[in-house]
Image (tube, rainbow, N blue to C red; front, top):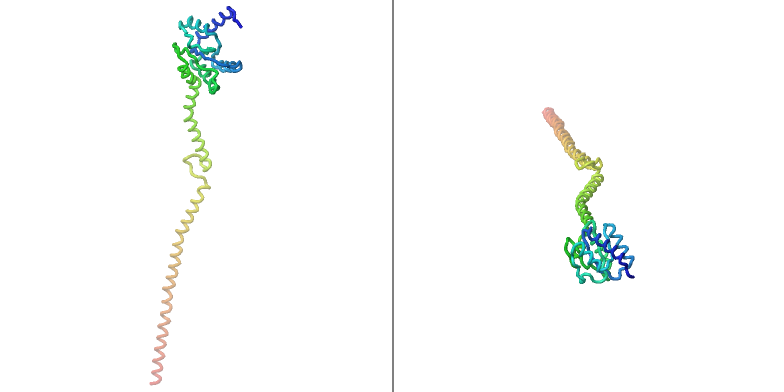
Length: 243
Protein backbone atom coordinates (compact mmCIF):
# COMPACT_ATOMS: atom_id res chain seq x y z
CA UNK A 1 0.00 0.00 0.00
CA UNK A 2 1.48 3.32 -1.12
CA UNK A 3 2.08 5.97 1.55
CA UNK A 4 1.07 9.53 0.70
CA UNK A 5 3.62 12.32 0.65
CA UNK A 6 1.96 13.99 3.64
CA UNK A 7 2.15 10.74 5.63
CA UNK A 8 5.83 10.35 4.75
CA UNK A 9 6.51 13.89 6.00
CA UNK A 10 4.78 13.10 9.30
CA UNK A 11 6.75 9.86 9.68
CA UNK A 12 10.02 11.67 8.90
CA UNK A 13 9.31 14.47 11.39
CA UNK A 14 8.44 11.92 14.08
CA UNK A 15 11.63 9.94 13.35
CA UNK A 16 13.80 13.07 13.45
CA UNK A 17 12.24 14.06 16.78
CA UNK A 18 12.83 10.57 18.24
CA UNK A 19 16.48 10.27 17.25
CA UNK A 20 17.19 13.87 18.33
CA UNK A 21 15.98 13.24 21.89
CA UNK A 22 17.32 9.70 22.24
CA UNK A 23 20.33 8.83 24.42
CA UNK A 24 21.19 6.04 21.98
CA UNK A 25 19.79 4.73 18.69
CA UNK A 26 20.00 1.18 17.40
CA UNK A 27 18.72 -0.60 14.30
CA UNK A 28 17.57 -4.18 13.90
CA UNK A 29 17.01 -6.39 10.89
CA UNK A 30 13.73 -8.26 11.28
CA UNK A 31 12.64 -11.48 9.57
CA UNK A 32 9.13 -12.84 9.96
CA UNK A 33 8.28 -11.10 13.23
CA UNK A 34 4.57 -11.38 13.89
CA UNK A 35 2.34 -8.46 14.82
CA UNK A 36 1.87 -9.95 18.29
CA UNK A 37 5.63 -10.26 18.86
CA UNK A 38 6.22 -6.65 17.79
CA UNK A 39 3.39 -5.48 20.07
CA UNK A 40 4.86 -7.34 23.06
CA UNK A 41 8.31 -5.87 22.40
CA UNK A 42 6.88 -2.36 22.24
CA UNK A 43 5.12 -2.88 25.58
CA UNK A 44 8.40 -3.87 27.19
CA UNK A 45 10.20 -0.86 25.72
CA UNK A 46 7.55 1.56 26.98
CA UNK A 47 8.49 0.48 30.51
CA UNK A 48 11.91 2.13 30.00
CA UNK A 49 10.59 5.08 27.97
CA UNK A 50 11.85 3.70 24.66
CA UNK A 51 10.35 2.95 21.24
CA UNK A 52 10.51 0.40 18.43
CA UNK A 53 9.46 1.64 14.96
CA UNK A 54 9.50 0.01 11.53
CA UNK A 55 10.73 2.70 9.12
CA UNK A 56 11.72 2.81 5.46
CA UNK A 57 15.45 2.97 4.77
CA UNK A 58 15.19 6.16 2.69
CA UNK A 59 13.57 8.02 5.62
CA UNK A 60 16.25 6.76 8.02
CA UNK A 61 19.02 8.07 5.75
CA UNK A 62 17.33 11.45 5.41
CA UNK A 63 16.68 11.79 9.13
CA UNK A 64 20.29 11.02 10.11
CA UNK A 65 21.64 13.38 7.52
CA UNK A 66 19.45 16.24 8.74
CA UNK A 67 19.84 15.64 12.51
CA UNK A 68 23.45 14.37 12.88
CA UNK A 69 24.89 15.09 9.45
CA UNK A 70 25.80 11.42 9.17
CA UNK A 71 25.71 9.58 5.85
CA UNK A 72 24.20 6.10 6.16
CA UNK A 73 25.37 3.50 3.65
CA UNK A 74 22.86 1.04 2.25
CA UNK A 75 25.16 -1.87 3.20
CA UNK A 76 24.34 -1.44 6.90
CA UNK A 77 20.60 -1.46 6.28
CA UNK A 78 19.84 -5.05 5.16
CA UNK A 79 16.28 -6.37 5.05
CA UNK A 80 13.41 -4.85 7.04
CA UNK A 81 14.77 -2.23 9.43
CA UNK A 82 13.41 -1.09 12.79
CA UNK A 83 14.63 1.86 14.84
CA UNK A 84 15.14 1.46 18.61
CA UNK A 85 15.33 4.76 20.50
CA UNK A 86 16.40 4.74 24.16
CA UNK A 87 15.37 7.98 25.86
CA UNK A 88 16.17 7.64 29.57
CA UNK A 89 19.20 5.36 29.67
CA UNK A 90 21.62 4.71 26.80
CA UNK A 91 21.49 0.92 27.17
CA UNK A 92 18.08 0.20 28.71
CA UNK A 93 16.27 -0.20 25.37
CA UNK A 94 19.13 -2.18 23.86
CA UNK A 95 19.08 -4.50 26.88
CA UNK A 96 15.35 -5.09 26.49
CA UNK A 97 15.67 -5.86 22.78
CA UNK A 98 18.68 -8.10 23.43
CA UNK A 99 16.64 -10.14 25.94
CA UNK A 100 13.85 -10.36 23.37
CA UNK A 101 16.33 -11.67 20.79
CA UNK A 102 17.32 -14.53 23.10
CA UNK A 103 13.84 -16.03 22.71
CA UNK A 104 14.70 -16.69 19.05
CA UNK A 105 18.19 -18.11 19.61
CA UNK A 106 17.51 -21.25 17.57
CA UNK A 107 15.72 -19.45 14.76
CA UNK A 108 16.71 -15.74 14.82
CA UNK A 109 13.91 -13.44 13.74
CA UNK A 110 15.63 -10.25 14.81
CA UNK A 111 19.35 -9.30 14.84
CA UNK A 112 21.37 -6.15 15.39
CA UNK A 113 22.22 -4.23 12.21
CA UNK A 114 24.05 -1.21 13.62
CA UNK A 115 23.71 1.59 16.14
CA UNK A 116 24.57 5.21 16.80
CA UNK A 117 26.09 5.14 20.28
CA UNK A 118 28.08 7.93 21.94
CA UNK A 119 28.15 9.93 18.69
CA UNK A 120 29.64 7.20 16.53
CA UNK A 121 28.32 4.45 14.27
CA UNK A 122 28.72 0.87 15.63
CA UNK A 123 28.34 -2.26 13.52
CA UNK A 124 26.16 -5.22 14.45
CA UNK A 125 28.82 -7.02 16.55
CA UNK A 126 29.73 -3.90 18.52
CA UNK A 127 26.05 -3.16 19.06
CA UNK A 128 25.46 -6.68 20.39
CA UNK A 129 28.27 -6.21 22.95
CA UNK A 130 26.79 -2.90 24.11
CA UNK A 131 23.30 -4.40 24.28
CA UNK A 132 24.56 -7.16 26.60
CA UNK A 133 25.39 -4.55 29.26
CA UNK A 134 22.62 -4.44 31.91
CA UNK A 135 20.64 -1.24 32.23
CA UNK A 136 21.26 1.33 34.97
CA UNK A 137 18.27 0.07 37.00
CA UNK A 138 19.53 -3.52 36.87
CA UNK A 139 23.06 -2.49 37.84
CA UNK A 140 21.74 -0.44 40.75
CA UNK A 141 19.61 -3.39 41.84
CA UNK A 142 22.65 -5.67 41.76
CA UNK A 143 24.68 -3.11 43.70
CA UNK A 144 22.02 -2.86 46.39
CA UNK A 145 21.82 -6.65 46.56
CA UNK A 146 25.60 -6.96 46.92
CA UNK A 147 25.56 -4.34 49.69
CA UNK A 148 22.67 -6.00 51.48
CA UNK A 149 24.07 -9.51 51.18
CA UNK A 150 26.55 -9.17 54.12
CA UNK A 151 23.82 -7.53 56.21
CA UNK A 152 21.47 -10.42 55.44
CA UNK A 153 24.17 -12.93 56.38
CA UNK A 154 24.74 -11.08 59.67
CA UNK A 155 21.01 -11.06 60.37
CA UNK A 156 20.84 -14.82 59.75
CA UNK A 157 23.77 -15.28 62.16
CA UNK A 158 22.01 -13.32 64.91
CA UNK A 159 18.80 -15.28 64.35
CA UNK A 160 20.70 -18.55 64.70
CA UNK A 161 22.49 -17.28 67.83
CA UNK A 162 19.21 -16.16 69.38
CA UNK A 163 17.67 -19.57 68.70
CA UNK A 164 20.65 -21.29 70.30
CA UNK A 165 20.40 -19.09 73.40
CA UNK A 166 16.69 -19.86 73.65
CA UNK A 167 17.35 -23.59 73.39
CA UNK A 168 19.99 -23.34 76.12
CA UNK A 169 17.72 -21.26 78.35
CA UNK A 170 19.98 -18.22 78.43
CA UNK A 171 19.02 -14.55 78.22
CA UNK A 172 22.31 -13.61 76.57
CA UNK A 173 25.80 -14.95 75.95
CA UNK A 174 27.02 -13.90 79.43
CA UNK A 175 24.12 -15.17 81.53
CA UNK A 176 24.38 -18.27 83.71
CA UNK A 177 22.95 -21.57 82.46
CA UNK A 178 19.39 -22.46 83.38
CA UNK A 179 18.61 -24.42 86.61
CA UNK A 180 17.98 -27.50 84.56
CA UNK A 181 21.49 -27.42 83.22
CA UNK A 182 23.01 -26.66 86.68
CA UNK A 183 21.43 -29.66 88.51
CA UNK A 184 24.07 -32.22 87.51
CA UNK A 185 26.81 -29.99 88.93
CA UNK A 186 24.98 -29.67 92.29
CA UNK A 187 24.56 -33.43 92.52
CA UNK A 188 28.21 -33.93 91.71
CA UNK A 189 29.11 -31.52 94.48
CA UNK A 190 26.95 -33.42 96.97
CA UNK A 191 28.57 -36.67 95.99
CA UNK A 192 31.98 -35.11 96.54
CA UNK A 193 30.92 -33.88 99.99
CA UNK A 194 29.69 -37.37 100.92
CA UNK A 195 32.97 -38.82 99.75
CA UNK A 196 34.82 -36.24 101.83
CA UNK A 197 32.78 -37.09 104.98
CA UNK A 198 33.15 -40.87 104.70
CA UNK A 199 36.83 -41.04 105.71
CA UNK A 200 36.07 -39.04 108.93
CA UNK A 201 33.41 -41.52 110.05
CA UNK A 202 35.73 -44.38 109.24
CA UNK A 203 38.46 -42.82 111.34
CA UNK A 204 36.07 -42.42 114.31
CA UNK A 205 35.03 -46.09 114.12
CA UNK A 206 38.67 -47.16 113.89
CA UNK A 207 39.53 -45.02 116.95
CA UNK A 208 36.70 -46.60 118.99
CA UNK A 209 37.85 -50.09 118.06
CA UNK A 210 41.42 -49.22 119.04
CA UNK A 211 40.25 -47.93 122.44
CA UNK A 212 38.29 -51.12 123.07
CA UNK A 213 41.27 -53.18 122.03
CA UNK A 214 43.56 -51.30 124.40
CA UNK A 215 41.13 -51.61 127.39
CA UNK A 216 40.67 -55.37 127.07
CA UNK A 217 44.20 -56.37 128.25
CA UNK A 218 43.91 -53.98 131.22
CA UNK A 219 40.87 -55.88 132.54
CA UNK A 220 42.38 -59.32 131.83
CA UNK A 221 45.77 -58.65 133.46
CA UNK A 222 44.54 -58.34 137.07
CA UNK A 223 42.48 -61.51 136.72
CA UNK A 224 45.46 -63.49 135.49
CA UNK A 225 47.71 -62.19 138.29
CA UNK A 226 45.07 -62.89 140.95
CA UNK A 227 44.73 -66.48 139.86
CA UNK A 228 48.47 -66.92 139.92
CA UNK A 229 48.57 -65.44 143.45
CA UNK A 230 45.76 -67.72 144.64
CA UNK A 231 47.54 -70.72 143.18
CA UNK A 232 50.77 -69.81 144.86
CA UNK A 233 48.97 -69.24 148.23
CA UNK A 234 47.22 -72.59 147.98
CA UNK A 235 50.45 -74.39 147.23
CA UNK A 236 52.13 -72.71 150.18
CA UNK A 237 49.23 -73.68 152.53
CA UNK A 238 49.47 -77.29 151.52
CA UNK A 239 53.17 -77.35 152.24
CA UNK A 240 52.56 -75.89 155.72
CA UNK A 241 49.89 -78.50 156.55
CA UNK A 242 52.16 -81.33 155.51
CA UNK A 243 54.95 -79.93 157.57
